[in-house]
Image (cartoon, rainbow, N blue to C red; front, side, top):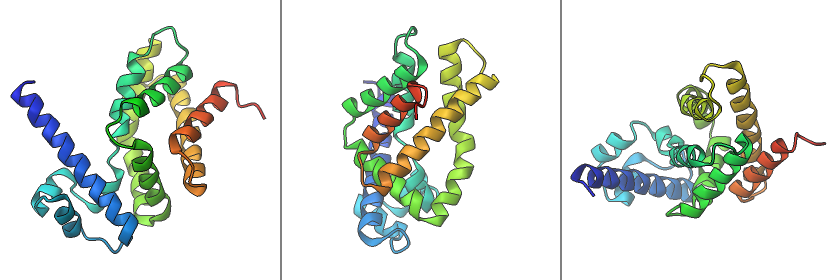
Length: 193
């Protein structure tokens, strides 16, 4: 591995460790009752290091380590697979290759987002920056442009189903990935009621 590769791996691990400690402390003490100084101490980094990775407290929750892995797996799926099948396969591949219990990390993140008004408000703004890579990935798989209305509708449908699945999993203490997979299967089957 090159020096640049090692540096990037160390940064990735540091960012994830900080987030893991933040999520644990928020779960144990409450989001509002936990300071970033406590998070830095728990992660054994200086406050300035924490702020290099997470400029604000909401960022410690909103950082999504799953999306880049999901997109990589989604684009690696065979081109002939239908989009939803590729998405479901990518989701399962994320779980199979994760270093940590990603379902637990995501469940904690989603519970916080669902229950902390400051985080709910931040999510709306984050959507604008998070959607373009998904639009590009679907466009690449379909041979369309990212601004094609059908690409946007597809992403909207999948995102809507995923959000409802996240909320269901959070409300029922369910396995977030199992519920999202079930929701995608429901969408894949044409939303039969």
